[in-house]
Amino acid sequence: MDILSKIGFDLPVFLFNIINFLIVGFVLKKFFFSKIVYTLETRKKMIEDGLQSARQAEEALANAKQNSDKLIEQAKKDADGIIEDAQQQAKAEGEKILQEFQSQAEDQISKAQKQIAIEEQQMLQKVQTAAADLVVKATRKVAGSDVAKPNVEKIIQSLELA
Image (tube, rainbow, N blue to C red; front, top):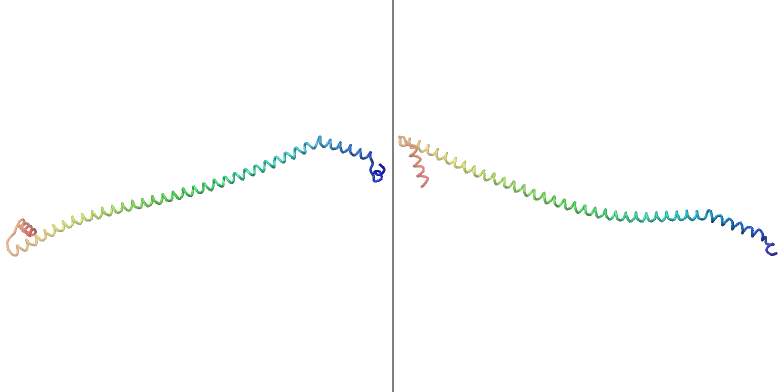
């Protein structure tokens, strides 16, 4: 022990320090260590929960992105279908209107042709009447007598047949 006392080692102080260390260790373990461990475990659990929530949010974001991409693609397809339907309807409506106009034009042409035929007939009758009147006047001047109109009409009809 002499050697130890030369280097400054004192056994009673050493024993007292060990007893003090054991008492302080026991007090810390009894009153503080469990609270510190509980706080550390609580923080660890909060961090793990936060990480789990972040992973779930990341997955939800990826799913939402996929769903939005699908919805956008479906909306594009629907819009293309609507545009195509509208174009077909417009084309069909245009053809229908064109047919109606053609039908109206044909009706007007037919009515005009009938009107022309009626007017031609009327003009022909007027020309025939005027010609008959001229023939009657000319015959009166040449023959010097009255020629009856029914006789002139018979003559005109006989000339038309020839």
